[in-house]
Figure 1 (cartoon, one colour):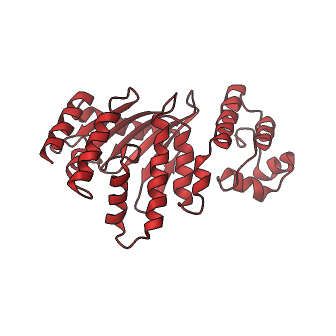
Figure 2 (cartoon, helix red, strand yellow):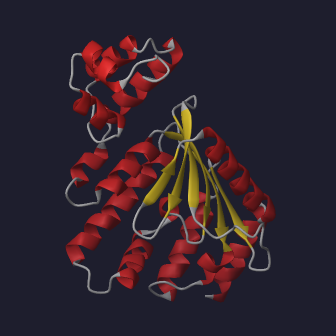
Figure 3 (tube, helix red, strand yellow):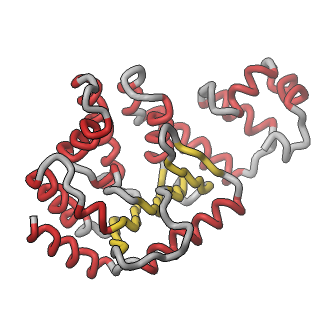
Length: 263
């Protein structure tokens, strides 16, 4: 928005009566903003009124409902940033090789962490489990986020924790799929939608109505965030291609029930 207003960082900082380094921190998402400061910046940049209102609404929502603040120092800053974006999401389209965090049970989350780090501190795992379960509120609130995810069949067959844990996990998914705002498409093992399939990523529409869309790609130690319109559009086409190659919602539920009966 600053660049659209034809301002350099130094010129904008002078108009905003703050240092260029402070403005740089804000633009890089390192420094948070009070509502009145955000409002002032938007006024200086002559933001479109509807865009201005939506940005202020998102900021106000986060200030009022920042449940993730209680996890600062207990959970990575990257995970907390993701949760704050996810909370403002009106829609999430995703591709995953594992059962998505928004649909996991507590025991399944714990099993994942133990498998990844067998010597991890129990309290640290407890904090992570509580954090992941808290994220699921977005599917249950009065105006819930719409989740549409394509998941590899192997995720439902791979036993993590124990058969009891997996049975409970599959039952939870079947129950969640009864919600109008949740769609799970299983990608069968004998289908490969394109040679680039394999990475887990989410396209997240932020705001209601959507203000912008981000693509978040899961990597080993962090997430890669894309906000370039061309790249986001390309990833949306990819996720839709995987969803089309997968089973329908009904067919997916039938397959999950068959896997469940074999456990």
